[in-house]
Length: 88
Image (cartoon, rainbow, N blue to C red; front, side):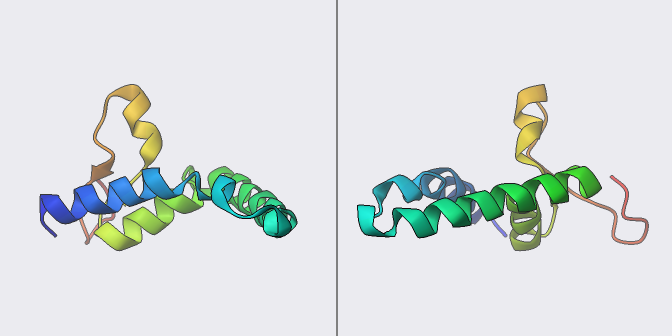
């Protein structure tokens, strides 16, 4: 996957993260419950793996070990993993 595709995927994650505020008010209740479910899924996933559901999705899409929180410690978001040992 080239750098252009990676930038598009990461931009989509950042851009789409606030889409729930754009929905009409009639469906806000459904999106509220989906948001709660997503939050619960993130908590469960993070407690077991140290990664959120978005991190897992990005890792699967790009084929590397991705974690958006690495930005806070000035590390690359995605790291190449050795397929034989699953280590960095």
